[in-house]
Structure formats: structure tokens, C-alpha cells
Image (cartoon, rainbow, N blue to C red; front, side, top):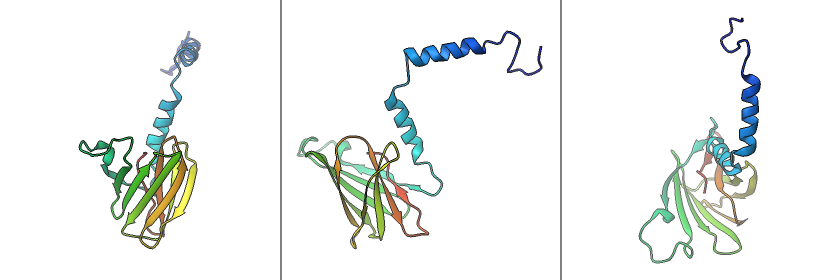
Length: 157
């Protein structure tokens, strides 16, 4: 007998390994669950600030247009920057219009939940930016400003 509490004579490790393989084969974790888990932890970088979602027009109860017809308006806020975004997915792709408040010199990246950068644009002198994107999938915005200001990331939309 060994003194190690994790090992004993007649260990069940081979049986547990077989059970794990069987569970992965019979009832695998859905790819979507794995992607959501990675995305939830993906923003956790020390050098990046997460912008809090303050407003989402899809959560509003009152409205004159149906959700399918209306563009979605979102407002995100970090400690020193507000990101206003309008998302219109009524066409073949997605039109994303945004503005940084206050207007700052910045590059804005659109990232997919797999970590790839889909598109990049520069904010104009009024803090405005525009993206025409293919439809489908979740995205987030990453606002990269001049140092020492940290990048700001929105939550997933």
C-alpha cells in the first residue's frame, strides 16, 4: 500500500477513464455551450476594461415598431467612455453604426466569439464609426485608444 491518498491498490482509474470516454461519446458537451463558456471568460484580461450594458432597445417593453423591423440600440459605459451602437440586421448582413462619447481618437475592432477580428474601423472626429458585416453569430466591440487609456470591450451582442 502507498501513503498517497490519491492512489491505492486496485485503483479505479481505468474504469473512470472508460466512463469518461463513454460519457463524451454518448452525451458530449454541445459546441455552443463550450463557445459560450470561452466567450464568458474571454474578456477577462487585466489590461482591458469591460463596458457595462446600460440600455438595450430589445429589452424595452413599449415601442411602435416590431422587433423585426426596428434597429437595435445599445448603450455601453466604462469608467470614462460611452459606446452607443445601433445594429440593423434587416438586410442581407448587419449594419452597425456607433459613436464614442466623448469623441476620442480610437480604432474599433469587431470580434467574433472565436476570438477572430471580423473588421476594424477608425472613429472620426465626432467619435462615429460604421461597419457592414455578414449576418450571423455573436460579436463584441473592442475600442483601442491611445496609451495610457486601456482598451474597452463591450459584452457580446
